[in-house]
Image 1 (cartoon, helix red, strand yellow):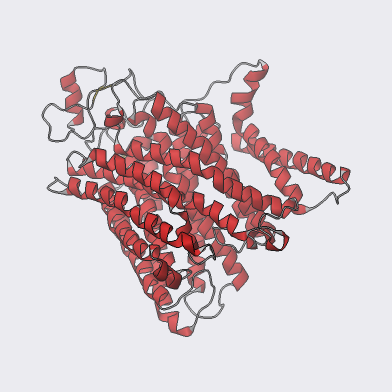
Image 2 (cartoon, rainbow, N blue to C red):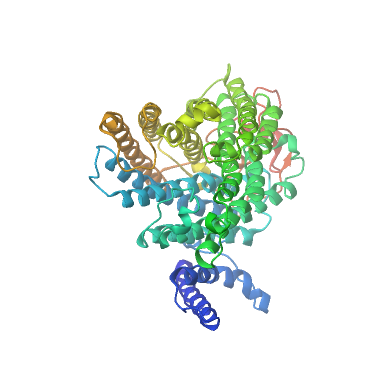
Length: 611
């Protein structure tokens, strides 16, 4: 199995890399073994060895030396553990990997809420709590940043534009196989003392933390490389591989959301990679980028980090917006309201996201003259976000709504993100932010945006495209039970956080004053209910994949291209290239047809869209 080869290759790579770094250190008169310097240098070689071992050598590199190119299997479960270049396989690999990371992060959240049910340190001490909290936050952010783009951007987007694969299939496989080392590094960090900086990893604290902090930096850097490669691939695919007639004005709104997200990943991720590299060099090479005693500037890290990480909030949420608008149109049986305005709003969010980062730094000590401009830009970005909401509401208005499980999650995104957006307006105001920063009010706001918006969108997408990916239907009754359980648990957990935040409950602490115990107990009980609700999804997901009802090609009666081919799709997606005739939202328009699939007559094609 390729994974075994990857583990062997990674281990060999680490040994060779460590030996090389130790030899260099000895040659310059330094002590040969120094855990952080050796580990940081060996990591690059270990990841390269991992990639070669899982299949990059066999399927990609060896033909450079004249060996015949290997062929890929087109069927069987083993291909999901191989360096497969089929975009559909890679999409499922992303989905399952990030679901594992999501549930690991959720388990860490349960430990946090167990500790916070009562005052005092009952379950773990403060250092252990900080390590668990940091790992929870980092994993959740990684899932929010990459899961939807990796899973559905890979699986669905090429089919929706009429392509047979991604523009760079081997590079696509490479971008996925960079992800497992990220999960390994985060897990290993706990064995080396963890890190207590939270998911933001602020310097100079991150420079001084235990060895576990180095693994955080290496994981973030590696995931950034994967995001840059994946974003470039999606951009080139959408620009160059659209089917005949698929003009920019006929692109499904989900494709627009993924395309814009990919541009943001390509543009902004390099900055956070730079921040991680600077910390690594401070830790391992004697640099002093963030040491004020030696002329460094701690605020430099925050500026670079948030120049990426606030656009990253929209990298997390724009795909959920795309999924939401896509499903609302199909399940309301109405054309997407204000389609061009919605596309313009997505583009506007991308542009404005680059000029709002310092609202995270109102209390950091930056120049006061910067507060008003960033307050204004932060308030301004709510306008294109509001246009997205108007597009959704306009589409719902007088629609023939079908309350399927995916549609429930789409409506959940609107409800939850509305609360997250409104509370974000408060935090954009400098005087209010000074009072509320570093409290649970910020924690609640952040979770309403990312979990209530982005992760609800991810699960809506899973229920929506599960029939296409597996050829099986998920159980609708269990799906609705999961939705209402997660919706109730989510709001019971995070709404009280606004209250205890206003009462002075600080985030990132393992203990608090006794007067805050009732509110924390309510939050913890809600969190346990929320966590248990995902057991319904896990059972439904696994059972339906193994023994679920066989799905028809188009169970939702949707009009986009992925629903006009069998479920699961054939290896190259289409028997003949489709020809796009109109946009995919022509519900209620006489004789409207999104695409001529080249099979049978146009009347037969219309009938298939009306299923």
